[in-house]
Amino acid sequence: MTDIFTTLEHDHRAVLDILAALEDMTASAAGQPTQMLVDRGGPLTRELIAAESRHEAAEEQYFWPTVKTKLPDGQRLAAHAVDQESEAKTVLAKLDGMSLDDERFMPLIQDFVKAARSHIEFEEQQVWPQLCPTLSMPERERLANKFARAKKMGPTHPHPHTLPNPAVLKTAGIAGAALDRGRDWLSSRR
Image 1 (cartoon, rainbow, N blue to C red):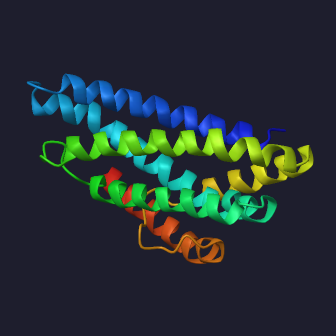
Image 2: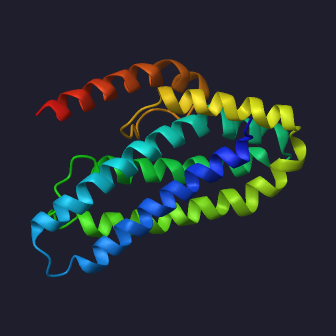
């Protein structure tokens, strides 16, 4: 069995790998033909959007509510993190479906890379050290299982206007995720 911190760390490393690849792409994009951007940047961007959409929805359903209840300063910490995530969803929503030769694409990716790194650092350096000692290993494992289930059923596209409320995400979020999967299936058929 894995615990929530191992699960989250795995997700964070995967996102950081995508961000590093996107940074390399944007750094070498000057003077590159548009087709090279499409070939490299399109799949990376879609992978980032799907991974982040699932991860953030699962965190908002289970991880941040745990932070709120377990830590004396949990309300503030969770609110700060959810604000960061909401801003990220807004940027991802702009990137979702945007042409890679759009002049806004590169600046948005660069902004997202900085914001995502800042959020991951906040979570790992400020929240985890406080939360870890408050959870028993069985609690960590249960939380990891809930997180994994929510992530599996989560959205594949950002929904910045959905309230980051666990109850809303557990109900309306499921419908949104189903619509996302239908949208993904249709776009793969084109």
